[in-house]
Image 1 (tube, helix red, strand yellow):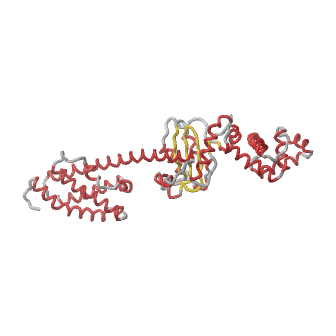
Image 2 (cartoon, rainbow, N blue to C red; image 1 turned 60 degrees about the vertical axis):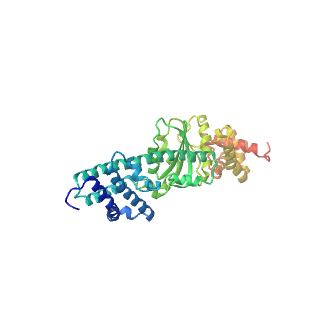
Image 3 (cartoon, rainbow, N blue to C red; image 1 turned 135 degrees about the vertical axis):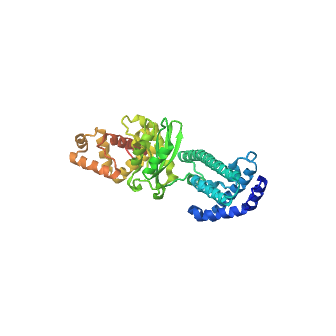
Length: 397
């Protein structure tokens, strides 16, 4: 550079002359100093290079007339594709700006004081502009994700799937895999979805969140190990859905909390959702219902309320297995429940020893998984026998 000071017009002409040189030097510096830049696919590296070149060109225009240039963010980041903002963090963008400024400062270090001050002022403005761009993008993304998540949860609750549902779920960053269960409760006065998601991640789980007025719905899946981002969490296989529901219970409002049954995958989540919603609607009928409670523990109340799924579950999981296994076991259960769960009264009615009744009840529990000696399970079994007898055309009185 010549030693005589340049006029602003001459400086502008000189800057335009060396703009290509500055761009080339910037790309070289990016490759040498920023490892994440070199690891990018070629297409994204090219997009980052365009942003850097736009920053240099914008500085020259801004130096020409700082007041007439449009907003810097639109000028520099306008050429960046939307996916670039998702793949390059704000921290990396600021590193990019610093490299560009360092390259320009080094090249014009012998320039006028006004030019160096302009570079400093511009670097500050472009940094603020970058932060504003990312803030706007994050806000827009958050609003879009919230709407998309609500749409996905509504689709699961209604069971109305379409071909786009898998892509919508993937767009939300769902890390769940395998079995799924739906948890339904009341919406708290102050719902913090970020805290709720962190609590789920701590248990190696992922959640889809739906708020429907006073009702909060969670679709829970076990997260893949790579989705935990280095957080300390329990192994996914060690926690059942009831354990996860108990840990998430404080994030719900007051009232009942109902967990639907486990289903194999997200496509079948509507079955768990229907059970959980039906259970939530009648949970108040069980005076001492635990929180959370399994939807299947509310089968009698659901059946009385007209839930066809509950009726079918009681018949297919209790009545028919017993009927198919042994008429003797079925009749013993009938007698035991009709006699107020009295071993002696049942034994007298059946003309057997009480130990025989005790043995048969143990066999009933082994066949269907419910213990008739418990008061709550006795109610479930009684409902199943009534519904089964009504549905069985071959049963005689």
